Image 1 (cartoon, one colour):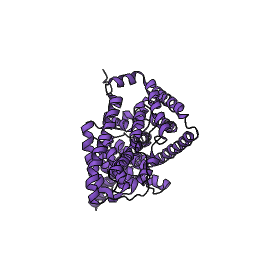
Image 2 (cartoon, one colour):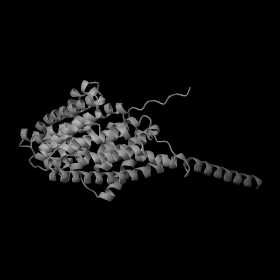
Image 3 (tube, one colour):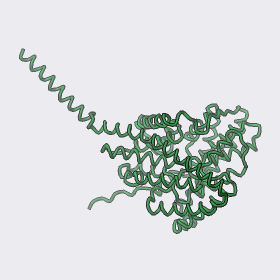
Image 4 (cartoon, one colour):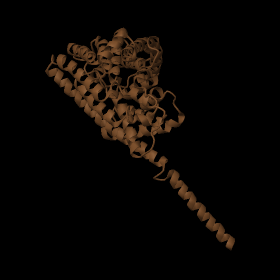
Length: 444
């Protein structure tokens, strides 16, 4: 009888001690529990702030379009002045907010916890959002997708600091992917972007975390905005006989063009060229010169302002567009990107790609117009960012053209190879060198 009581007491003690151990390791005060809450809260917040940012950027673009239509010649003065002001403010108050935002997140992945005080701090991200909206209001050829990636990483870092848990590299990757997914409403593209671009060495254990962040951010975005398709439901397709002719030409032309953009941007941003040295020594004057280029093209064409979304969508649905649109948008985007003001190149690159596809329509008049334009977009985008899978999935999800998947894959891989003939280094990874975090000094 005594032995039985002793055994029962021993089991109770074991159960209580085990319960306390579980509370320590998995309870509300545990690091594991707080980390999961941080990721969940961060993903929800990313979806919300991405929507708010998108709405603000769309409003800014609409405002500028009305302004440029009402005062046709005035942007020749105001756009260069805005470029000068934005670059001065960026360099003075938030130098880490310049450019796209994706290179900053790539650099931040090396030391995420230190980066929450610099590259992906709330202050840097908030300043970048304000300056990007101001850039859109000035007519700059910028997009909001790259800044959304940096903003998403900052939001995730903020939730981790609130919950007092360390920010790990996989979480930074997940937050950036969630930002892409929320910005375009393209969850699969967000996942592939994380694999191809944000993580140089992707670990399988990150997959669940990335998927969780993408799904939550995407669900929040869809619940507010509805289940929309970025460019509208196009549903393009192409017969095999046409694809065999169009795909290799589109891949080579788009890949070489995208590679040329990446090469020029790297030379002017992080190279050691004479022009680069001069631009770094005279950043305000250089920004003004870039603003003059953007303003001149915008006033002369009336089509190269902003993201180029409207022009790209018009070409996708078959509206005739000037053949010079692609080259003109290429120059406007390059001038904006190297000027040093905040803003992304995702959306403008898709517009340039639509211009490439518009040129290819003249070469292949018998092929379906929408399909040719979309293949041009895939090829150019893949050539710029060197992420062929992301390019295919983004265009598939933003146009609902799943019947064009095989030609898009073939085009993207040809474009990726062609781009390397012009520019060996991947654009975002090359730009991230300008944001590399120096190691902390060792204590003496």
